[in-house]
Image (cartoon, rainbow, N blue to C red; front, side, top):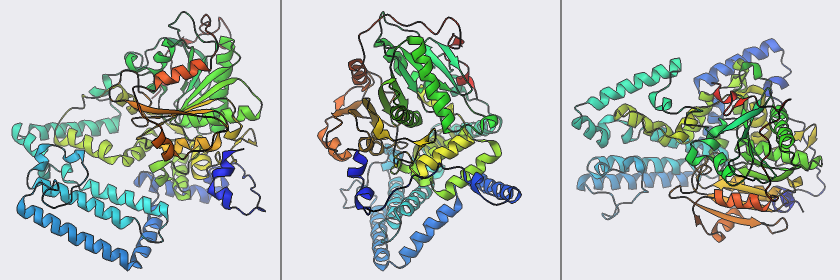
Length: 607
């Protein structure tokens, strides 16, 4: 039985006589209107101008959320009284601490707050900085209380208002200003103001880099092909969207079934082939596997009409054809990461529907098939927001890497905006602590207009894949059709694909599944090589006919194991592979799969 229909509340509560009719595939809002093109183009340009001014955020979304919050708060005298009492209590606490010069650790009767790394140094425990830090934390918590738990406010509006309030308060933190940050004051005294001079130089450098696209010295410490993406291999296939890399084997024998890795195209593929010591590709080669990697083209304005079907056909299906033709194997192991994992799930479902049995297994790393609980990114997904992004992309033909990076940075503003600014502009320190993962993160890509519109509408906004409306080749696909074993990985601190959302794959897949919950975030939790300190993971198998366990129940019953999940993944792949044989040839001698150039290829170099 398909778990979707025995566990989804909406399905349980639906009237028995109602019939769900699949919707037709969504198309960009700019293509659906009956307004004449001339007037529509005026609206698009106006919306695009607003989007540029607001960094792509829709004012109407915030306005709607604010109105919902304000109206319900206005008619909630109990909530108002609670907030008033909390404000008075906070004021009394701060006044007492200010008078006594208390440390604020709870021993003086004041409320001990959660640790905050912004105020972690000893200097922040001294008066008056401890009072300022505590005032900021209390102010932040008060605004969170003010935005949440108001009777009648829609949950999405509540989440958005809490996010905006928290972001606004964080921008006024005492750590962000030279005169209220004791670490900056101390550095200024010790260096006679040199830190501020260096900070101004760093600011001027970053402005110049933003305007002219120059690279910083820290970024220049890393170079693709020199100390990033250095695993030896050959590009053995190229089309208008991908280059396919086949890596040189490092063992005398290999399992017959090759591994095809499909990374996300929102960033470059080499997160899975960073440095030699933490290369996922290198690790799999050492375990006796033949590895193929998809390297996506960085699209430009000419690629604006590339859609999800193109990524499916030119990306995954062409790569499967090439890998199996070269190796002569009847099946391969497929691995998808992030958005690449979502596309792989779609492809695997379509192949199962069409009786295509060329997959030996499907592995999804930090990938979602249901987007109803997609974490903080859901804050930016609504009809108004998606339409504004479409109008912004309509001018250029793509969504730029800067626009995407800005949205992700807002989700972790303390770590990705405030902390780097303090370090560089107030403390005057150079960004020479860049490491390989940071260098990869700065090497962003663009998203073509049509594909990104379809992705946002069909997957995020409408949740078509989970609800049986997503179509491949004009026919709907369902993840429940997949019958090959699945290995799924979520990470504990993932803000892009929260592990609870990744875990929902259990509701849709009717096959044996191994689920791993790894420590770390969306990137660091996946790049977790053996020997990496302070790493752990949980792992458990679920048979296709086993009863469903809620994610928190799974977490409580599955004990953590120290180390890297990579070793368990290699064992799992080996258990689902045939006896090892001699390695296959590196590409074909001639024809469409002949070697074109050395890895990492040319597409990864596109800026």
